[in-house]
Amino acid sequence: MDFSALHRFIERRWQDDLLPVLTDYIAIPCQSPAFEPDWAERGHMQRAVTLMTDWARARLADVPGARVEVVTLPGRTPVIYIEIPGEGAAPVLIYGHLDKQPPMSGWTQGREAWTPSLEGERLYGRGGADDGYAIFAAILAIQALRDQGLAHAACTVLIEACEESGSGDLPHYVEHLAPRMGAPAVVIALDAGCGNYEQLWLTTSLRGQVAGALSVRVLEEGVHSGDASGVVASSFRIARMLLSRLEDPDSGEIVGEFHAAIPPSRRAQAHIAASALGDGLHAQLPLLPGMRPVHTDSAEVLLNRAWRPQLAITGVDGLPAVADAAAVMQPATTLKLSLRLPPTLDAHNAAVRLQTLLESEPPYGSEVAFRIDMVSQGWHAPETADWLEASLERASQAHFGAGLALIGGGGGIPFLAMLGQRFPSAQFVVTGVLGPQSNAHGPNEFLHLPTAQRITAVVARLLHDARLAPVGDAASAERARMLPLTSGVL
Image (cartoon, rainbow, N blue to C red):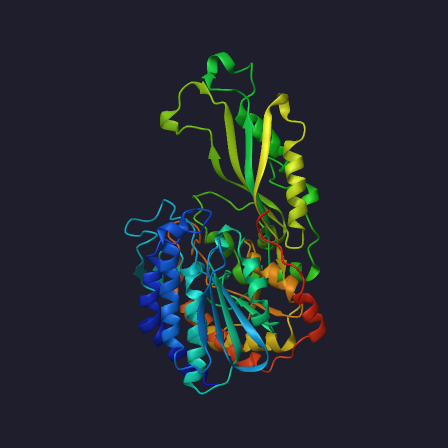
């Protein structure tokens, strides 16, 4: 393999071929079903699917046996499924998604979620980095190998359309496609982050999550606060009391039953990653002047983000805007909770425990309910095979000029837990372009183009090397294939 020629080919195609179609994709407001329940009627999802499949078919037209299709099960979001023949005993499965988070407010003037803008090496707009680029990078990696006449492993590409809603439709598609998918030797997921843009980062774990709405009601209707305060406990104060059952209000530490043991190897890797990042993990966040991270030790911050449970309040109902607030005690408060869980903790059991914790013995006889909206199982990577580690290290040195780096991820990709359950012999390469300030889900999300190009080259290297990869025991793989898959939604 001529690494220099590979990178030049990819860089040129990214500029001339991928960038135009990716900007067209960013302009499509194909929000995930959780945020756009009438997605089918609006047609944005179908527009994105058509854009991607038309592009893919045109680029694979000269690849014998390649198939690009849209698979749609009744009442579910579609998936794009691509099969590309190749060598080797087992295929490589490449995963991405095309649904997007809502636009959000707070974009810098001149930038908008659905209006892509290229500023230097950054392509701004919703969905480019998270992670619309995945299908284009996967196919370009194949093209780059074929340009040099190089062999590659058989490859399947699976692009789903409800990842940002917990991947509730995905288990049904994995079941439906299992006979065609086979038992992959390697699963490549291009939906993860990177600690910086100078190295290849491999994600070793992802947290689980329980998300839901905590509602507290104390009155039939709002009343004058002068009459009610001191007589009736406010619904907001009761909500605070309930949260204190889960989270220490001073330290933010979650109660012990939601913790799990951190493997010693992951602790050691966190210290190595912290040395590479320094204060970069928190410095890349838009902190206010004077705002400090919760811990002075960067390794502990990395472990907080990857292995320790953490609570975030992501929404609130029941309170008027400050400008509209009168002297009225509101009858109810509803908080949207997002509890991130350790990768190895059983998320469904945690959801039941959390509901019990919040709903039992409601203070003052108030009406308390916790509605579970989403449960996502965490994921912990198996030990990396020697051949794969060597391939990744070579690719990182060749295309980034630095060695491979390992890091635990703070978010979740339900697909990985599903595939890890189904294919225990598979190797996993979880990487991506979501580096410092890329701000997935928030305002000013951007794709760092040089990193996307290098990741494409890394995928090409892996597809070339994976054709020689050893496979696990066929009988155990077949037994695993028959296991039922669980959904990310409870």
